[in-house]
Length: 264
Image (cartoon, rainbow, N blue to C red; front, side, top):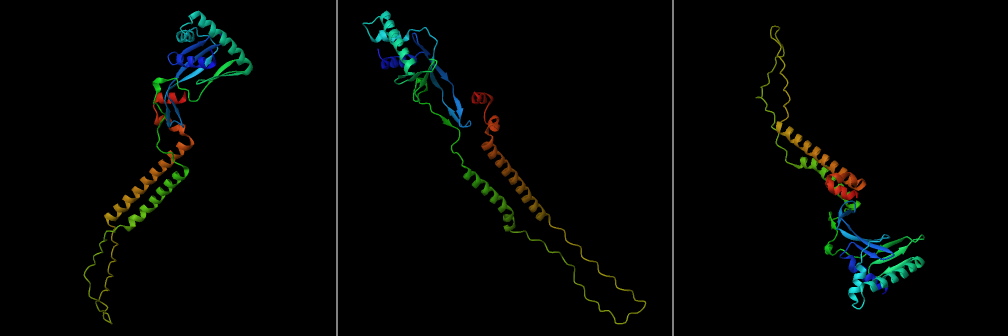
């Protein structure tokens, strides 16, 4: 019995069981971790099994059974004795050196008070059902501050160009005021008779009202400009909120169950 064989048996047993006991030391426990969110809620991580160590005894005999099965000349009692003696020696080494490496699994470590804990390898995979699962990103591209500034500047230029476009359009011809028939000038005599009345002054021509088509044209562009300003304001508010306080938008992006998973 050596540490390489022990690590191999633990990994083989933990694939099919949630608990594998090391007699006299503790037990390895595999726990299923559900899907989680990261990157401010924009990435969904797949489920996986986490391996940790517990000082409590599990009471199972999976390691003894594996050792007796792989060694035909060893029965269950002898396998129990061999495994117990090796683990007792490993426990003393762990208390002195504070670290025992399990190849392919990780490191079993001890604190100053000789409390044991396990640090799994980063690439440890003990979840065959999750083969092929990979993190899923909910966004295809991360906008940089420069890209956001460029987009906002483009919208501002578009708003400034809209009134100019209205001036470039062909203006509808404004009907000229219709003048009445020209009156022939009346020559006044140099000497007026006393009984001859003074000529009445001609009434001034009233100003022509502005055509209805031109009024509706100006009203239409005024409404378009107001709508675009409102849309740009909403876009700026959304961008600022997504950058400064993304948590405020979570209730709009996720369901109640997804928010509970995100908080967990």
